[in-house]
Image (cartoon, rainbow, N blue to C red; front, side, top):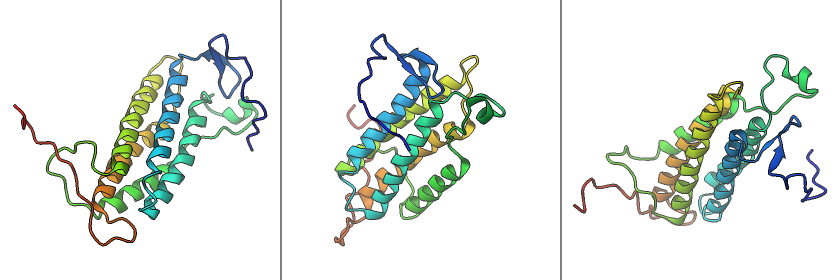
Length: 204
């Protein structure tokens, strides 16, 4: 259980912040950028969910993903200690696990099963829900790039599932944006407006 009694502590006034293991690093540290961008993804998903109650099953999935994104943030906020890290830290750190990735893949397959194959790239847009999901997708891609860059830093270890989860989530968000542009809203019979497709060279 996390307990937050005070919102401001003044400990970050010098431009540093604490990781989960207690070490202090600059707020510009690549690890902070990584899980900060995961948090940004989560915030945009919260905005997207203002528009997804008309697709209850999808909205429920997005809620679960928001919780998993906090798991991903906790994973990234706790630098790996290698083997026996629980003994070194004094507790079992929260890590993304493969079952979370497997579940995400099952959701991609489920949503994609109702969609026609694409024959062009998709322009971000369509319904408000789709536009917000596309925005979340692009921020998630940025988070993924930062996480991969962090994993390449000397002395930094990032778990393979953490990288996979970020990659798979951006795939899910792309499919979800297509889904809400196609699937009828709850209580309606008509399908959505469909994808907004890129037409190469249209305005030359």
